[in-house]
Image (tube, rainbow, N blue to C red; front, side):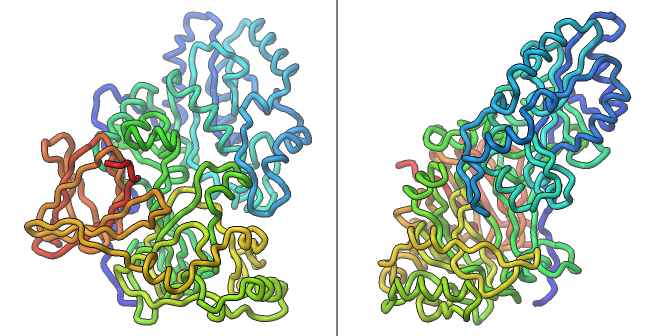
Amino acid sequence: MNQVISNYDKSPYIKITTSEAHVQEGWEDICTTLLEKLDVKSQQKQIVVLDCYHGVLDEELVQQLTAQLPGVFYYSKECMLAEAAIRSLVYPDVTDDEVFGYLTRLEMINFFDTDKLQQARRKIANEEKTVYIYGPGASLLAPRSDLLIYFDMPRWEIQLRFRANEIGNLGLANHTQKTSLQYKQAFFVDWRVCDRHKKTLMQNWDFIIDTTVRQQPVMVSGAAYSGALQYAVTRPFRLVPFFDPGPWGGQWIKEYCDMDRSEKNYAWGFDCVPEENSLLFAFNGIIFETPAINLVFAAGRKLLGEPVQARFGDEFPIRFDFLDTMDGGNLSLQVHPTTEYIQQHFGMPYTQDESYYMLDAAEDASVYLGFRDDIDPEKMIAALHHANKGAGNFDADVFAAKWPVKKHDHVLIPAGTIHCSGKNTMVLEISATPYIFTFKLWDWGRMGSDGKPRPINIEHGKNVLDWNRRTAFTKSELINAITLVAAGDGWKEERTGLHEREFIETRRHWFTKTVLHETSGSVHVLNLVEGREVIVESPDGSFDPFIVHYAETFVVPAQVKSYTIRPHGESEGMECATVKAYVRTGN
């Protein structure tokens, strides 16, 4: 692969300039500010709640807070159920399955021992000194407090801490448990519980503290933070991308996203998964990292649009990510569950319909999509079982149809369709958000990053495979179903999908001049798939011009309503292209 000069921005941020955004950096300044807010000279007892998301580093936080904040400390974990009781509590949702569970309906209060909670409340009421209550669910020990501080944590950072054996699951000291099992429990239980609890506090917290970077905490007031979230939905923005290696990973991301060339590969690039990506605010030049999903919680209707928020609630339904197999290997042969299956078995309201947009491709690039006409379902399932027991190879070409692909092709993958991107492709995956629900059928005999075979899900997979999706259907409905929608001076708009069974609509614009976009009631997610640089502007000047570089994904909130995109900088006078996804709303 030829070396390229990347202009991809790995740390995009939203600039907040307001005199009201007082920011504190470092533990000393933070604690000094808290003490000033408490007015310790008054000598009156006060109650301070230090609530937090799962995954913060207790050792660092407790050490710093207890050393600098005078008073009596209580810890929420001391009021929680015993670990055996918590394991029993979450078991119906965690299950024995190695990969999948069931989205929990548990609340934070369910993790607490009622008697211990009542005893703690009585003790706190009888204390004469200022009381600090620390830990997940700390506010449950003091429904009324004089000061409420929240320590938040992005999910990607939590995953990195799982891998480093630094943290356990909510209420558990299982730091050394297998990382994939910790992640599964967090996905199905911990994060659901913590999000529900956090949403009850967002309107009332006095301060919010970012401790993503060790020993470098940053604190802003609740009012400033709330203002930043509301400001974010008035303009285009990007999330903070993150990248991860994998057994089939390639080399494209290294060059075009300017990643570490010494790494073996990068398989995934996550540029718009708000449930796991971070959002960066620059408060008067100081960077503050926060979970992007908070934007959905705080300003969902403005961000998503009224009809979209009404359907999906506090979920961001569109996902953009990269799958890099350039000079790598095939993805696993896989299938995603149908809507009814994911609802019944996993508690998810909607499924992972998706598509592959070919951001780049080598001459020999291909995808597996749908079945061959002569497919025999029973023979295929038997062959999969045989191969996955190590008794031989599974010849995917005998059962699945293989199609050549080139740069800018768009392959549609409604749930139930067998599929797999082959080696030497750079895929921009455009999909619905339930990203964990992939049933792997065959992984080409490879080992995972832990040196063991990755979990295979033939039993789930065979229950959702649509055996009628054969070559004629695939060719006519799933590969390059591209139609011209409109054209004007220096631009044209094409519909590229998705399939009628999928709720996401995608449009591609080719342009050498300015293109006008209307959000029409839905959030837009876009990627610059051709061109070095474009500029996004407001026709009425309601937001500052926004620069986007090649391969960068960006979000345009529904309330923006109108925006334009045109070539900029190195791309002026050249043809550029964006791919845009939004939820079909009937408009």
